[in-house]
Amino acid sequence: MLFDKYDPQKKQQLKILDPKGKITNPDLEPKISKKELLQMYKIMSLGRVADLKAVQYQRQGRMLTYAPNRGQEAAQVGAAAAMAEQDWFVPAFRELNAMLYRGVTLEQAYLYWYGNEWGNHFDEGVKVLPIDVIIGSQINHAAGIAYASKILKKKEVSVVMIGDGGTSHGEFYEGMNFAGVFDVPMVAVIQNNHYAISTHRSKATKAETLAQKAVAFGIPGIQVDGNDVLAMYVATKEAIEHARSGKGPVLIEAVTYRLGAHTTSDDPTIYRKDEEVAEWEKKDPMIRFKKYLIDKGYWSEKEEEKLEEENKKFVGETFKKVEESGVEELEDIFKYTYAEMTPQLKEQYEYAKQFEDKGGK
Image 1 (tube, rainbow, N blue to C red):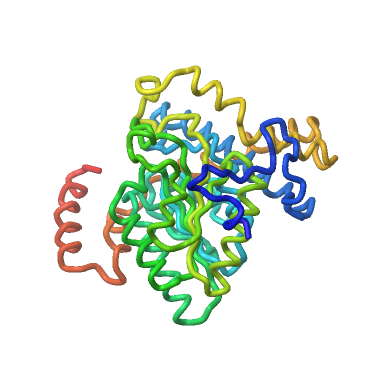
Image 2 (image 1 turned 45 degrees about the vertical axis):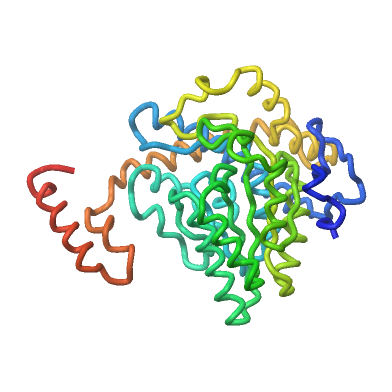
């Protein structure tokens, strides 16, 4: 068991693929088909282009506040690829790559950040919850889904993601404690990108690692190189098997880095140095995965150029469709919180509607 070998309290971090794309732990290299490896890489590539373009669209005043995820592609796709079709994915708000891998379309993702409520309306059979901006609450959602799965004997596992800053919120502890007490089939992935907006991880907790917080919940925990897509796949795969077999939840800390801003409302140059970012640029998960695929003979620079052009075209066409669709109906903002609008929501809707009727937005 990986959880027995890699002790987070001793800072033992799981690594398989180094920054140069070389395998450093051959015994743990996963047996993933060429087709699946390329699918993982192509989603990461699409996510990277879509992320960069979203920032540009926001700067042009064509999209609302956006949360960039450049640099965190491996942590997300490695975990998502390890999931089975029946499993649930519960995101926070920076999980574009994992959502794309699990079946959410780019158009739906862009609709959300554009301000259209239908961006949370996924296709039938896509087992992904809507984006959750309320920090920490997604842990309780995932624990609830997993508890229901256990009661109904569905053999579904819920995989939930949270940032390092989110682990300082009460709902993280409440949800994880509930999951541990009831041995629910849940895997929680902490994307430790080192900053909770402008607060460095070292100032948010005295814990040596975030994975060791699992000790307090009485569950396994492991720290993984979050820029290593293979390590993330292996760790999540074993964690899911552990959870699905009835042994309870697992906590994974993916050590990664947010290369961009917290959101497009943030200026990271105020609280971190360019030299620090430059060092993490060298550990870019896209670079190492591409080199790994090229070394295996699965990929080439020529294919890379073609893919990049295809992604740019696809992203541009997708956002054009989003802009043409416009914003949602006012009522949509209120009607999907509950099966039926409560009296309070109806009152709020009627209040907002009077401004719309006068030409407001």
